[in-house]
View 1 (cartoon, rainbow, N blue to C red):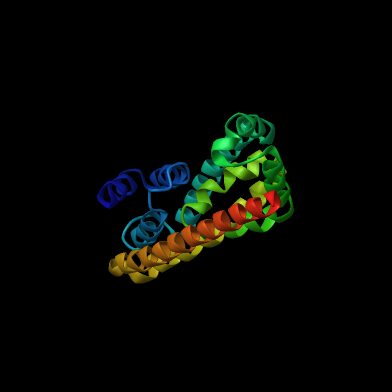
View 2 (view 1 turned 45 degrees about the vertical axis):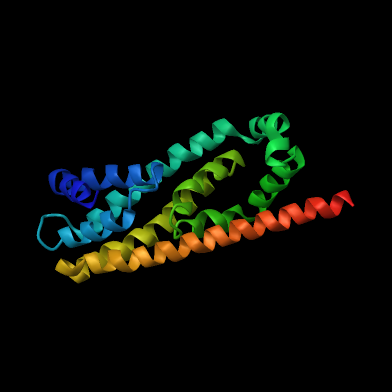
Length: 204
């Protein structure tokens, strides 16, 4: 995949960066770390500039985020409630759980959308619950742009600074990603355990 990514960026420049980062938001398995650090490296031997790569990648990320936000709007809470009413017994969910989750996102969504941009996988998928909770679009756009801009700026600058050794930062980011995945899985399991125990306690 890395060879394919590099070829597209070499052939299409800023447009390639934009499209790849947009796809990375829609399909999280595509590694943004490779795109951004290689983009930074390309500024050392092509006409691409650090500022140009940052702008192209940020626009691509925001475009992808808007698409997922739109999907969230289509799903919305009321449709999710209907699904839960129908299949909730299997998932052990109730419409009350959905409303609680929506209220939580309404309260903490500001920080979740912003800081989620620094977490693998989450940085892409966080746009969907933002749309489902009807977060104000201008606020979503602002937080997404700021979080993405910081992430992209750091990695593009690092790629430019390391030059031929840009792959080293990819190795470091792989370790970071794996740690993040483990933390996410553990947090999810702890939540499931807490949720099940809470349900059992309420039944007593």
